[in-house]
Amino acid sequence: MLSLITAPISHAVAAFVGVPAAQVAGLYAAPAKGFAADLALPCFQLAKAKGMAPPALATALVPVVSALPGVTAVAAGPFLNLTLAPTAVATALLPGLTDGRAAVRSTAGAGKKVCVDFSSPNIAKHLAFHHIRSTMIGNALAHCYQAAGWQVTRINFLGDWGTAFGRLIAGWKREGLTLEQLRAAPDQVTFLNDLYVRISKAAKEDAQVEEEARRWSKALEDGDTEARGLWQIFKDASLGEFQRIYALLGVTFDSWKGEAHYEDKMGPLLTELAAKGLLKEDQGATVVDLPTLAGKQFKKPALIKRADGGTLYATRDLTACDDRFAEFAFDRSLYVVDLGQSLHFQEWFAVAKLLGRPFADRLRHVGFGVVLMWNDEPGEGLEPGWAKGRTRAGKTMLLREVLEEAIDRAATVMAEKNPDITGEERARIARAVGVGAVVFNDLKNSRSNDVKFKFEDALNMQGETGPYLQFAHARLCSIERKFAEAHPNAGAGDPALLATEHEKTVLLALARLQAALEKAVDTDEPGALATGLLALAAAIAAWLTSGNGDVEARVLCSDATLAAARLRLVRAAREALGEGLRLLGLIAPERM
Ligand code: ARG
Image (cartoon, rainbow, N blue to C red; front, side):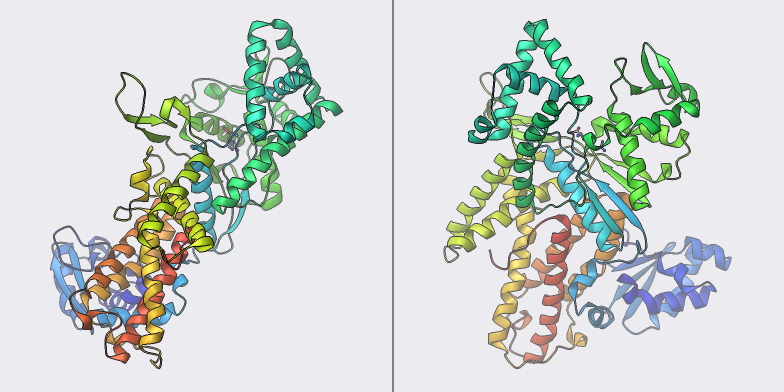
């Protein structure tokens, strides 16, 4: 989008230097701190092509570029600093934004396919607050890739396999539980969790119980009907809860093939590993000796099969990856999983490479840091502080609980600030704002950082928050509603009338969103788009506030033609902001 504005400059510079314009188009950067300009053109590469020193080229380009209408150029060492006339920016940009959503679109990924493995929780457990991270980073990336032209497959690789289920079945049988009891429980996942705690305790104290659990695990692996039936019941109960939370978050998946799906499909992979001479026995277990085969960065072998013959997480991931490649022929495959699992991904990615998989270099572990919650009542003798996923009384916070509290708090604020909005509308907006606050807090920073969560901060309308962005959107919607009344017969609006610095700042923030989206995709950082949206919202706020003391600076000024031009910018900004928020997983209400 920025290229719409810079195209004439790129052409003039390219002609002078003697390179294709496309080579200039990718060079623009933000001006160095302390320089009042809109853009900077670093001259290093171009100077090389021209056989000049960079500062000399920058100086030589000043008259060339300043000759263009609406551009002022100043040399600053090896940089050419550019200041644009608002009108020039508006006429270049706005005609391409009759649908403002185009500002957050790109064709960079056209024809390419990506698989996004995200959320992927373990069943028979609750979604804890920390699950917000994989779920919403993955969801945002899936949206961003799609907006950048990629064909996206969203995968929930459920953790529905492992010895925990043998244990649960043993506990279920031991206590003679029934499906009716499970269904009657106020919370089925809590019912299963409690059962798991009881049986684990019993197994610790009684070897007989442990033996039963092992037998049920084996029965499950062997496809025993009763074991499979119970496992299915546990799975269904978990999925019921997961789906309610995904619905609240607006998250969907294209594939739910979990670990269990691959349980009996690993034979060919094991055969292939053996045939290629990659397997080794190690204390009864079967491993790939990575330190020898893949390099000294690996300190230990990768486990492929346990001593008792059971298969492992890494083996299931490899098998699932083969299946995904066969089905989707992906160009890239993302695994949105916490940084604590880095070694797991390094190991099986290395095994994929040893196997000569054509997709081995297309796999990306998209890691992230932990969630810290503000703990204001840590208990006696302790100071309030940040705690990992826990709050009051050291209890693990569930995702559902955090969302519900955020929604309640948003509803309270709305009842105070905007009592006109009531009933179902208030509930709907409170849901969007409460959930949006939690989600944006998770996405705004670089994903490898730990996230600090405090309700007051996440919901703060003045901070860099979801509600702040949603409010900017609602403010634009309100202007659009009032416009129809104020100027019912206004025309389409001529961008050439947009002549203020504030308007230019909004236009430039809009023009930069596309690069922010592309960066989000290239680096798998939704935070790049979040930053772009915050810049847009700040520009919008400054623009709208500039009308506070000056009626004629307002969008709804007395001159209907000027008002119509400004409304065009309002609409483009509102559509771009709303779409940007949607990509991040937030709903932008029309009023708040
Ligand atoms: N179920 C795993 C867990 O909760 C995460 C799975 C991530 N995805 C994957 N393909 N390994 O830790």
